[in-house]
Image (spheres, rainbow, N blue to C red):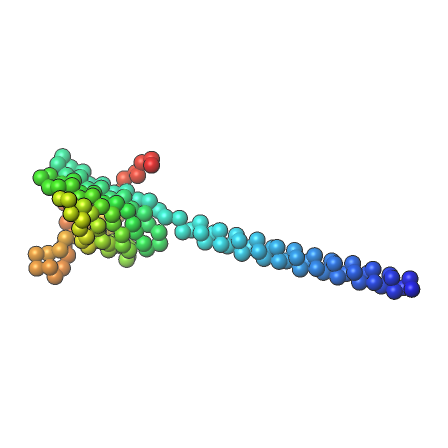
Length: 152
């Protein structure tokens, strides 16, 4: 009888210790998975970038957030003898070129037009559709230079 109780007691201890090892392994695996998920979320923090062109008469301001290849933000044109265009930009970065749609308000009307910017060093150079509407031309006269975004 003592032998049975001793065997039963040792068996119980062995089973409990094995169960604790499995629980410990499960907790370590869960912790590892949580850490990997946190690292993946951490790498997907959007990068905020601000660009500005300013002369004595004209200003163009572009503030964007980049998440992977996706771009969103605000674009403002304040050009001499023209109404201010103020709106939102959303698109994608493909290589060194930003392809986006610009939704803006001008002269009391909502409008949407495609925009394209070439990234060259710390500048963005906007492309304009040629007169025959078959190609784009980049205008370096209005190059937007990367600036500090300031405090929000």
